[in-house]
Image 1 (cartoon, helix red, strand yellow):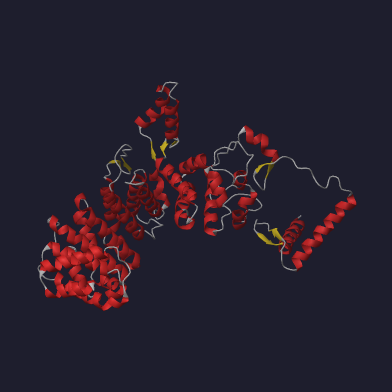
Image 2 (spheres, rainbow, N blue to C red; image 1 turned 30 degrees about the vertical axis):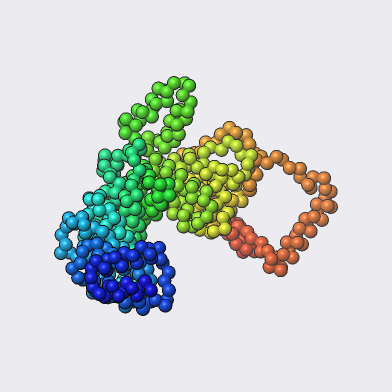
Length: 560
């Protein structure tokens, strides 16, 4: 009934009446996302009627009302089939100021029309394959980049930037060819990075260092939304950028990584928005070549170094709380380097672990990022090792029991999701410089068996990557407890009485044969397959492993 009345007024053609009836329709259906199939034809005709009105010279307020209703109707995919034509797309492009002939954005009164047109385009492109093809034909990506250049330094048109960026994200998501066009032809990487700089109001103090005001206000909701959309678009543009071939590419990625470092150190208007902002920053950092991630840390300035050395001495002895705060802040400094961004990533990872769900989507990106940073950058690895795997003192509890970051990561090593447990184990292995004996000290053999089996390191040794040769230092508590630590569980156990000590030799032989017969039965019924270690440390059926060792012994005796 609503569509029938609105269609009648729209066809009548009087601008004031059209605006009123469409405003009423918009207010009533603002939250409607599912439509009755019985009124489908009427909605199609209403869409066609609105496009006919939009080509006329009507007031701006009437244009906005038309576009609001069109945005609501474009949520229905079936309605879009007959109205998604090149002519109609061009009408929306003109209203959104996406035509190249439009040189500036001076009329503030037109901004609501631009925003609503971009919203309509977002819905139509997302819901219509025909619109996606027309977007390529009309070179929509280039027009969107051109609009961004017009408004990148003008904060009062943030809504235009936000929906321009959202549409750019959708195009690059739905068409992989557009990613390459954005990256190289349209220079999307520096353009979108500049959009982020503008949203964060970054002031550079060095080539890859920005000034951070920890006492400054949080980002506004509009700035946060713009930044999130820019991060998502940049992710698509850089999704295949694992290798850097040119010096200019390396410089651009370092600038982007420095902007992302700034992003990690600021907050949004709410805790949820801050987490969403940081989550998208983590995803984008995963696309940055690992050699360019060194800008996530930076040397302390002379002022910071002096302040760190004197602050504790200046505080009176009774100021215990203040001293604890200073010590907490000093945990973000390591070896003369500012580790704030890495500390934020570590806290972000722990929060994602504590959520207890969606580990593959929410946790693996940050774990993978920290693993690659640790493998490539020594200072980052040593800082994370100090935070995650501090020197062992209390070994009375199993490694997976407790509330520390180490305990949480060890629990993940036996997670049901193969991808989650692999990346958690890999992260700890890298922190241990890929040395098996060091990993087992912190996790126990049982928790690490899956990683060691996959790497062919069940017999011990170390991984393929090279690390510095500095040795780990054990605490006195660990050294004293070490002889009584159960290597399988990784914790201190009281000596248990040996059940065969009181057996006679005949009883021992009887129990041994009983065990052999049980294993033989399980093996013959293929309920259990005996396995052994090959010389290279990988597991294989026991017979094959014994054969390989026999060949090695024969070869050795022949050589002698």
